[in-house]
Image (cartoon, rainbow, N blue to C red):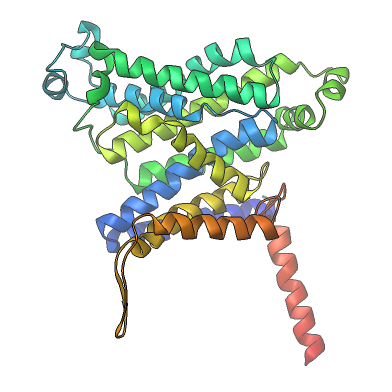
Length: 349
């Protein structure tokens, strides 16, 4: 077994041990932030696959998340709970008595989002850049409007309440680790190299024999699949979903994670997802009154977003390609830096 593989396994084992400790010692608020970190890792990687590695600028992620969240919620809710939710108009008969365990519902959420991704992506992937972004944004909004107006299927604008809270740190981080491993193997493989070639120059990639339509659709469907899984985890974490949750602002948050981490970097997306999620919660203190000794600062609602935006601007000014650019954090790089530090320390002595 290669040294790098052993270190990866060791890191995963240590991380699982830390998760066990966090799960035992953290309160429910901190556990919720941990779960959100993992969910945003999945969502960030799913968007980075399309935007970063394939070079397709899509803004329809919130729509795929909605498909996943509603699919998982409807499959995991008990028949009694569905009857309580659908009091204005009864649910469609073929869904009324369905109740699945969480894992099959999670997979089905991804599959349904992937199917929608294929139906949306196949006709519009000939578009490029801004035109593709606008088209995907439009389809995302269409999906939201459909969810709002299909009363007997999604309960319309009322949304779904009392969705079972199956999402915990093991489900969320298990899915995040699986997504990271899948992305690493995909990008290192021949499909990943083909996607990067399409990103760099479509004409040259086609001249080399790469089927543009096949690879673009594959990337779009896989991105939609993981976005659906992320949406399902989010729905089963929050316990309630409605169409207004899946507006463009949600896509913007994921895009922010991708750009901040580095378009085309897996480790950058992981780092960025954790930093952004923790910072968004940590800065909430700025929205309320602050007392520093005898000095009192009156709280201004929304101040945390101002400070957060300023911090983001500073980061982008100094790292205009994101925190990692297109680079990855590898063991060789980490150990190489340590060796360099030891060498410098010896020289100083």
